[in-house]
Image (cartoon, rainbow, N blue to C red; front, top):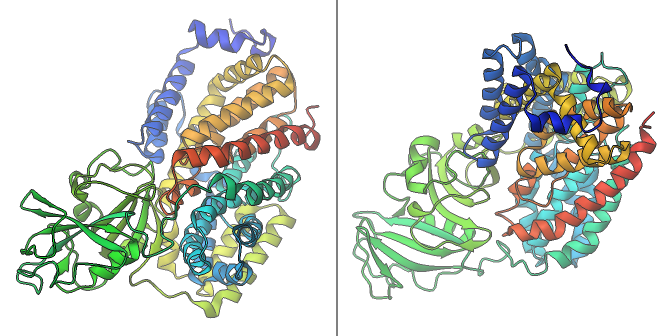
Length: 609
């Protein structure tokens, strides 16, 4: 006999999970969910592989039907995100965002003035433009801007990331997380009390959070990040990157002394060690002779490494050479989804896997000891790569590596079409706001960008981040399993029980649980996985589901007290020279402030009854 869950005591969800009285499908779904979360936390498996792998297991076991398993690929939120990738690529290719931001940034003389010039317009812009490409475009601009103004870029980059996240909560298109929740709302239209959000509806809570959050950053960011040393602000600031270059056999430096080769008293760089056939020559003197095949290990700034790489007689380390034509030098940050995390640079094999040679590595702004090949890679490591021209196109939208600067041959922005891209963007926003269909607005705008050549068809195809789309679609499949098996309702009752049985307590518990999952896994996955649990919690207390769903949305856009909680936070980790404690000091109070505002306003905007 099946007992209706709504007729059970509030702590039944907790007792069911503890007593092991789940059905076969519920037990399997819970096990798959746990394995997926563990896989993402380990950083050994990318989010899309983990999610789609979990869906495949549930499909093979019969827990999900084919239609349920792959419904995520036709979900309105996922398809909208795909169209927005093309729109954002066009904005980037035409330099539209640069043309908007550079005049607004100006020439402030103080750190707080620079933060105001940066964070306020960035938060406003990110309400309509996805924050990930926005941070990718702005990071090198902010570093150069800070260098010109003689300001510390480390006090600007993390606030840049936080400002984009805050601004993204003002409209339903501000972040991909918002669109995931919106897609789930469309898919759950048959559930009583569920409806999609209006375009600006979440701004009733998101705008106060953004205003207070930006004000918080202006006041406290210079204080919380005061001790963080400069990372790339001055070429004379050495000890940032560990760089390796090889003396070419028969080249002009083969047989020369260090002094005659001009490798003494380099600006922003010094020779730390020579690796000759596996033997180390530490602190070599000016009269030490160089031999072909020597690996020279330098410490210094990224600009100095790039300048040194141009010298005749020096090349990438052996086995990692790139074809002499069409070479570029790019700066990247490794994400937690990079498959080489935990491996050494040598064991991973950048040349064979990515077609790139590692020239330099920096971790939290500090130089790493030893040879580059022996360095074990961590999430957040910043690397300088020499690669072929196709590298930028292949990895521009990758979730495993984040491009934070291109130093080589890249396509020049098509500035003469920036005004066209701007008009199309405004048209997309206007249509979505008045007609309510983000899917139609995004794809009409994407088509218009291609037709007007703001973005080429090849660039549009390359802008599609398949790993992101796969991860979202997979998480929606697991979300479907939580709903169809009833496990989401049981877990929702558990959140009600730990919230003291009250509606507000259950919503607060759900908010905290979503933040915890976001801070250590993926914001999109957290939103999708917590959505059915929110429906279960609302049903358990007889409440409207909308305030619980809104809590999940705003919580999934939080998790700023760890560098891996949000993609943009990790993107600035290396360039800013940050440490984990910096995110705790600046991000945790901001998350607490945002949570307090959200939990106060949500019941007023979306009443419980």
